Length: 223
Image 1: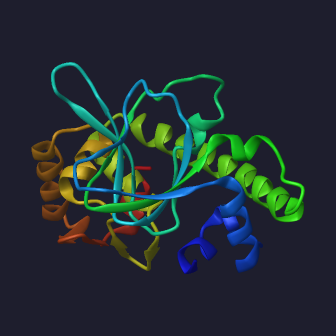
Image 2: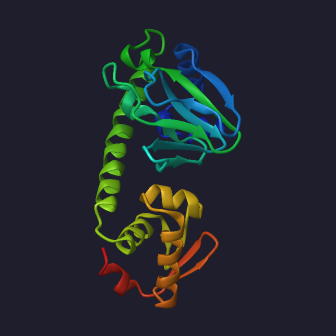
């Protein structure tokens, strides 16, 4: 329940309201093993997913074996699958895979298309929360389009770094090197080479997933 209380879908809903909504929705908790597919490309969306534990990648494969990671969810309480849930009979154009052993809450699509009589206030608040979530997701997708439209890999990297939450000049990357390469739509060697060049030029310093932005003004000029 603590995880769900921090989930945007259940904001402004007390614990007893969350319990009532879950009972009404007939949602279920499902565990997936690492490497297991939650939904396939071409599947019809049936559930809204709430991450309870683990990590999930949303991916798209292309002919020739290349792959792009559209998004990664690894914070408990994060939602995914909500955008395509509200397209009329539109199949997923991507797939979802557990990148480690993962537990999710699956809420049926039908729950969001009707209100329940006995818990109407809670249900209405939940639907309002969903509208806010969809608006934020649209904003996120807009930012990613802007990032991928950058003409050079260096500009993509800098745009990504500035999009992350950071304290002063320090950025903690939520993705590992391979995931970040897939997210940016480039090969891992190309990404590593560019990061090394940026370090040699004293623009950044990289240690594991910690990136220090050394020359803020010069980096901002690349945005």
